Length: 89
Image (cartoon, rainbow, N blue to C red; front, side, top):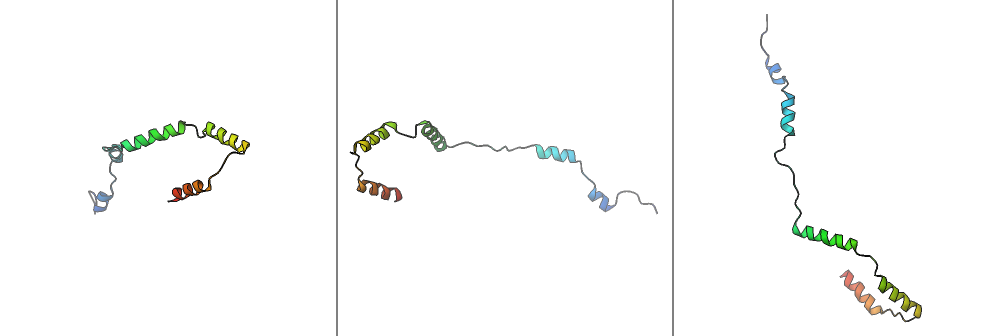
């Protein structure tokens, strides 16, 4: 007995043209995009400005050092406690 044609199993398992499938998968119709909000842009500008500013206020430190050396620097405990409470609350 001679069998001609494709059996059902061969027709289902026959490989398709993989090059066409890969090319179709590589084509992107919707590319991802990003657009920062105005608030984010303002925040970034402020962050850059604060990074460029000096961290230490030299004049204030020099003034406090001079007061400490002269013995005239006075620490107000109430002011410090009030600022600590305000920072926590």
